[in-house]
Image 1 (cartoon, rainbow, N blue to C red):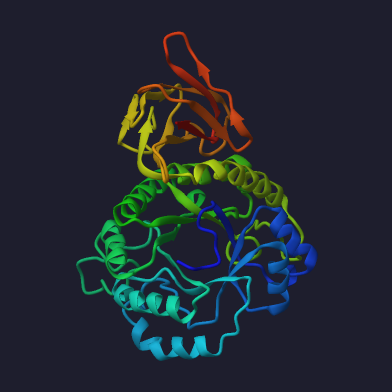
Image 2: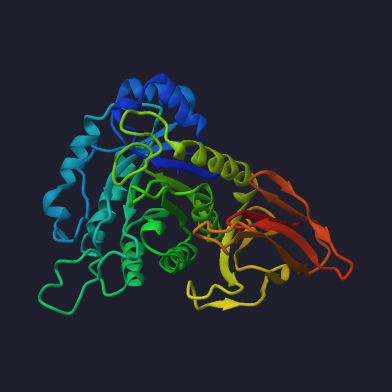
Length: 402
């Protein structure tokens, strides 16, 4: 795919950069904060010039006809609302810019609109040869279709979330699946379940997983902590996420954005910057691999039912820890190396940060290295042949076997 986003790297995005936050200083802060691209950006040419200067991409909204699934009452009406000719006309009047990476074609469509969205996405990819078509879909807490006369008023338009994802994969020819999940406005168990469903679909169809996570808050009095940002991102990476997008940078919905209504930084800026720095550091090693499976190891209590005390994962044997861990099993994209992307999942609400130890054995003579967001991590090789790596609550560690 000849597009401007470098898909060989872990990309980090953010939703919304309002007009009062587009000065040179503001846009430099976006780049310094570890943001690679902005979603829902307007076609503001002066701002796009600054994006190009600082190496930031834009996913433009308002270039082609928009669509939002909302509460589902418009399900199945996309084609009659947005004709294919309207997309053609939009492309004919579009003036390209090097900072424009993507064209936003809609948000959270219902399954009845998936067949037409497949045609729209394919058309937009051709009509805008330098951009990808961006489409974000519902999380698993969207409402389901029901067996009643009122079933037209729903969001997913299917009886299960798994069926909704299947409809997307059957009809929409994207090479990614992007969805939003706002964990601290929902729950951890739902987060894991959604990751499982989408990651399985991505592996089955050869797609990349993109995920929208929250840096803002649904409740004004609660601010998302730095460790809560880590937990969201590193658990997503344990399922193979290749694009992490924060909502919201400036006001879009809810409260406690990265910038306030005056365009000034809130406490979320430094939290986000710190975590993004870690993600980019770890991403250099992480993106050498692709996800093949994810395991829950340890006592997750009510968060998930599919746990085990230890797991064998490819070259890694008896992987366990003295705290619950999410273990992403990965293989090298080019080569025969293997890796584990591990998130310490003992404290998702950031109540009491601890340190634990991941232990494992290795099948065969392999070189073992480990990396965190701070760089290379010490690996102990114990007398009995077991390897050990320290990990803190909500931290992500990549362990490689070459």
